[in-house]
Structures are given as structure tokens and as C-alpha cells.
Image (cartoon, rainbow over all chains, first blue to last red; front, top):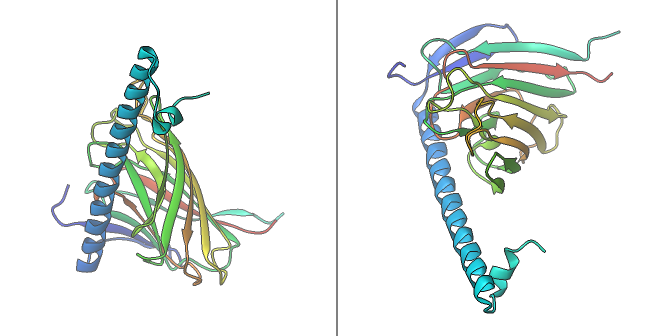
Length: 78
Length: 175
């Protein structure tokens, strides 16, 4: 891979394909996208962990015969 | 009988990789657009793919239903790109030489209304390992009412498309 970030551009009116270095604005835009993806991934992982914890608690309470919270009950397929 | 599904242009990424794939000067002579992508990227995990219409970084949103061999995921996103493939681009940790299979459809692209996008994708990871072959369907929106004259595709997490990734833009005419 090259150190300089590049883009492949095809001009649909001519069919001409060129490889160009990214502009500063384009690099900033990709960095913003990277940060958004990172934040989304963290949110998804946190949500998955929270759901797993609620499910585990619901299962333990069912086995023990103790009441479930509404959130725990919502994780069950009825 | 007139052709109704016409190839406008194809891009194949070269040996240096590419951060984005851009289609510019898209003619307004068709009814709809369709983009087919066979892609792979450099970040280790499977990544999503972003789409920009006319370079717009605002007014983008998307929602998806995705699944793999271990989980079903639903999500929404409103960010600087329209997510058109959820974790559908294999990364450097994926089975060697596997590429995604993604199709994006944009109806009424030259009209003066907000632009809707639908897409489907599969990571084509050729593995039975849990969680490593994502399949998704997505719906996207770009609120601008300008006719679309350019499209930009990029891996969502900032990686590069690897060599031999391809994207082909088609124009669809009324029958």
C-alpha cells in the first residue's frame, strides 16, 4: 500500500479512469467516518453485553423460581 | 428492443489500493442507477461500506437488518455517509481472496426529490466460523433534492479497498 491516500475516479462522460491523491477535506471526511464507525461499534458492543447480562439474569431467576423484572421478561421468547 | 440495463462504467482498484471509488459526471439520461460492488478492505474485521451522493456529508441516514451465523442485528445510522453494506466488506483477517457481493439501487436519481437507496450485501467469507459472514439488507436516504451526478464509495472504518475490488455503475431506463 502507498503512504499517500488515493482515490480511483472514473469520469462517466468520458470513461477516463484516474488515480488521484485525496484532498485535505477528503482525508478529514474519511477520518470522520472512521470515528463514527468506531463509536457505532462501541455502542453495539455495549448493547450486546447489556442484553447478555439481562438474559443471564433472567435465566438464573427462572431456574431459581424468583420473579423477573419487566426488562428480563422482555428478553424471553413466548 | 431498447437496452434497459446499461453499463455506464467499471472501476477496478489497482495494486496500491484505494481509499475511495468515485463515479463522476454521471449522465442524467437514465431513470435509476444500480451499483454492483465486489470489495474487500484493509481493516482486520469485516467492515461496513459508506456511500456519498454528490459528496454530501449531511442529510444521510440508513437502517438495516443484518445477520450472520451467530446473531441478528438491526440498526439505524445517521452520519457522514449512507451505510449501504453492514459489515459486508471482508477485512484482512477474512479468508484469503474473498470479496463482498453488494448491490445498491437508487431510483429516480435525477429527480428533484430526496433520494432513497436500497441495498443488499453479503460478505462471501467462505467460512463456517460463527459471526464472520454477514448478510444484510439496508434502506438509505439522502435528503438533498439535487440530481445525483457523483457517487463515492468508501470502507466505513477508514481502511482502503484492496486490489481487484471492483464497482460497476449501471443506468436503468424505463422499459
